[in-house]
Length: 112
Image 1 (tube, helix red, strand yellow):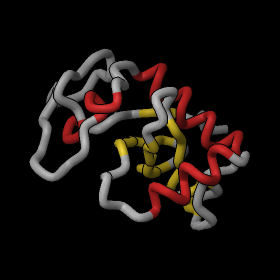
Image 2 (cartoon, one colour; image 1 turned 90 degrees about the vertical axis):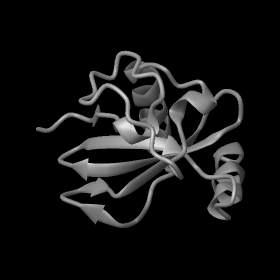
Image 3 (tube, one colour; image 1 turned 180 degrees about the vertical axis):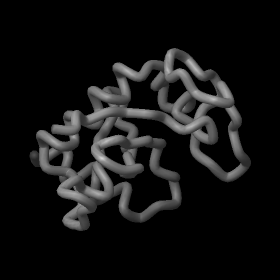
């Protein structure tokens, strides 16, 4: 059985923390950064991913039995989205401020 894992993506990191990324960090213009919502460790990211799955804030679309997207909200109220890379492995990022789905995630999170 494949375990749930969080891999991270260097394009969403200014500070690589303990994500073990290659390259260590490669922030890209237009990408939201985990640093902006104070996610600095793989354990924090994995905890948010697990919380989203437990609360049922994930997409109906699946690949190999895993939801394509999982949403969570940080302790400071910032919505984040994780995207399936394959076989239970995800990378995530803060949802852009202009994304209208942010409000739906926040509403669902507070009522779940």
